[in-house]
Amino acid sequence: MPDVQIRIPGNPGEYPVVIESGLLSRISPRFKPFEGRKVAVITDENVAPLYAERITAALDAAGVRPVVRVLPAGETTKCMDQLEGLYDFLLTSGITRTDAVLALGGGVIGDLTGYAAATFLRGIRFIQVPTTLLAQVDSSVGGKVAINHPRGKNLLGAFYQPELVLIDTDTLSTLDERQVGAGLGEVIKYGCILDAALFERIEACGSRENLAPLYPEIVARCIELKGQVVFEDPYDRGLRMILNFGHTLAHAIENAAGYGEILHGEAVCIGMVAAAAWGTRLGITPPDTESRIRHILTDYSLPIEIPSGLTAERLFPSMALDKKASGKEIRIVCLEKIGRSRTVPVPAVRLKELMEQLSSAPRCQDANPF
Ligand code: NAD
Ligand code: GLY
Image 1 (cartoon, protein in one colour):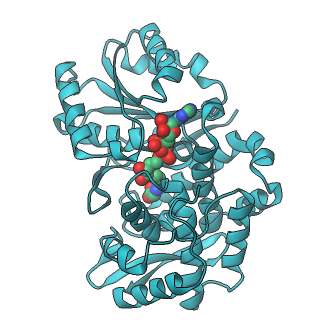
Image 2: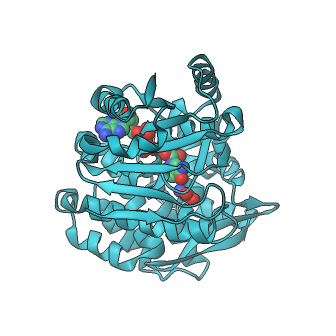
Image 3: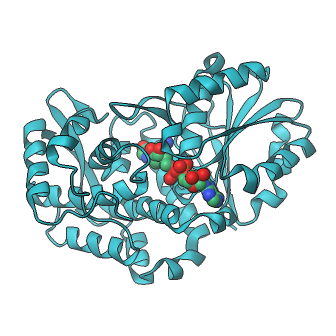
């Protein structure tokens, strides 16, 4: 039963990330610091019937007054309309600066709720209770909160750390296989960029079935890795950009396909294969790396090809809006080998060429990989 404490510098300082199988059944004491306050529980229509009542009962038992807002599920919820609706709800519920919001769900709910927390009354207390593999290994820690803009992913956002992250890995048992896969994409990403042993372990397991018993351990390891990176670079000015391995193309695919059509974690898988190919062409990534990544993703039934129809021409404008872009250069993340990565500034014209080489190769698959 690992209990990982990650350290984030600056205001409000360190916060605990608690990872336990079965945590929801004994979560109430964790809410004691909010006794006497209101907590707005923000969740979605799939997660609410599964877990909302357990959270509200635990809040009640801790002397906290819960109010609940249930939003539509899916990526399209990370938008300005839903954010505005959320502000209205918080105002109507009488949430003040000493109260808190609690995100119960996946990365969509976490990112949207976190952005509301960062901006409502110039910032209120924020708790994350992530229920997808992707949110447990990545989005619930580190303080990146955002909504999408029609022209690009996560273009409106902030850095705003939660005060508490509570992870019950048992919630993964109700997650459908496609969503598990999306989370595995991010797990494999950590192996690629920072931890060859993690990558090799996943490679050796060879299937989701064999890997599943290791989820609590894997979640803890990914959080530990992310914590180290975020501690070094909380505001994404250097090292932290490696966490975006595969994301330059992934964000463009999500945008061009229409938000929600290809899941974020799926798009990251496709983006990692492309980034390995680019790295090799740039003379940074050893030539066998791309095929190793292709193999591991295939073993775990994850997509590896750019969906047909998403040409370089369609994808590139959104890549140029990437938050790692500056002037005429776009920083991409390349692997020096499995387990070691760095960012590389690439002139926009060169990246466009690399994109064109990718999409001209005869290996695209149908628009929706599932
Ligand atoms: P999601 O939030 O859409 O959740 C996926 C689906 O699973 C939803 O339909 C949801 O209702 C359902 N669900 C959630 N938990 C469940 C459970 N336990 N049982 C059954 N169903 C459940 O998607 P996601 O993959 O969790 O998050 C993707 C988002 O996270 C993207 O918007 C991405 O940009 C963002 N993200 C943010 C960061 C960050 O650092 N902030 C990092 C990575 C990804
Ligand atoms: N998911 C990328 C980051 O947190 O920086």
